[in-house]
Length: 300
Length: 86
Image 1 (cartoon, rainbow over the protein chains, first blue to last red):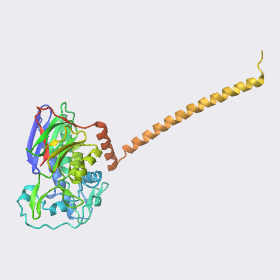
Image 2: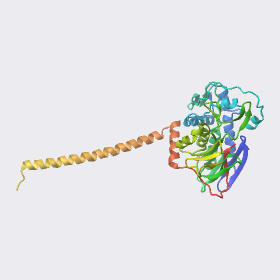
Image 3: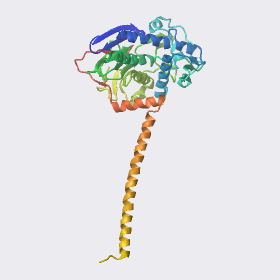
Image 4: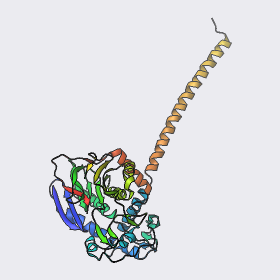
């Protein structure tokens, strides 16, 4: 068993390979993360930034950017718009326009302009034949709900394929595994790092946790967090404050964990319909398992 | 003793009618089975269609047919990774 851990994207990154240690697994993950950052980062120069700045023009982009935008649009379609990649201008308007450490240090009294256009993922154009992407004027793309999870999936797949052994990749709490491990991977699930939680076994697919308890900052109108309800353009109401989801891929897991916060009180029923396993924590701290998630209802 | 030609003709007609009836039943059964196979093939074709919607359908089937990938951990297990908001 070999484990490498480091910090990037303002979060913990970990790669574990089964059997004996291998050199280079961390580099595979780091290189992919660098490529994804150049493609779709919201905080640094990226192709996605160009697409946003030139809206509503349809802009030529790399295959990676095209894939990531397609993944985000697919997540929106699958959740009936609960996970909408066009909330970028709303997230920024609430003050989340830089790395979270910078946002927390900013002047909380500075008023932010409110966006006038409602998020609408159906106004994203993906032209796969010509390799172009565009978004309607007044909207900005933010792939925060899917790009990190996609990277975890792809990194785990690449490490397992290159070194011919099972691999686990964790990026900021998004966990993906690839290859056929003899024993389940042991993953600690919690709302926030070092908070109360439980350990579960992961045999395949991915686990993702979304929570309003992390990435919070002060604004002139009170505390805000980064999960935006596309219907209102404001942070979600905390009816479900945290959701951990297992799905056949980490992208699907993160899609549904994010959607659960937006769906609120109807989250459990919708997740059951989707056929995923989930661990929901409501605003009072009660843990509710959904689908085949192991364990019963209890306090967080 | 020689059978009356009219009775002989009548007996042959009955045998022929019975043979036709058996053949018709067997043919209907064969056609029904062929139609069932054709329907199943058509469904498979829909599930593997290209495009984003097709891929999603395939993944959803995988979720329901393959079971979950999260299981209880032994009480003494040491976590190797973490899933939490960051």
